[in-house]
Image (cartoon, rainbow, N blue to C red; front, side, top):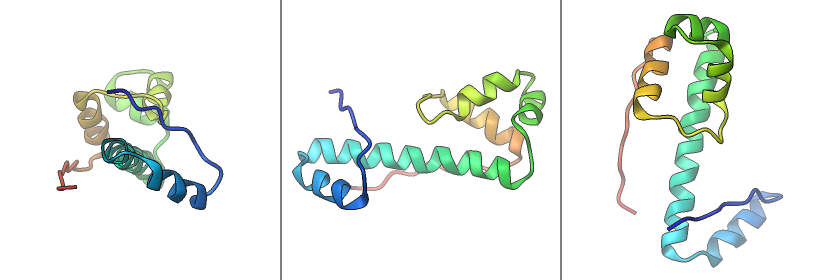
Length: 100
């Protein structure tokens, strides 16, 4: 099943749209939102530590453009890439699952 999520104008539109989604589509929507939150927290962590993309790239032995690509919210990294990025930041990653 492929679900395409569109950006909507404001939170009221998001809430209205969520009410119209099938249960499967709503779960996919919520899971995607969790990924976005996780991804943004990785990037925010790097920034709050005062690290540049170049510095993280040097720690990983890859280029700054590769880090920029990783940090794009549209990029879907492998688990290994996520763990390596977290290691370069010196932070622990926790994955969790919750019943819907």
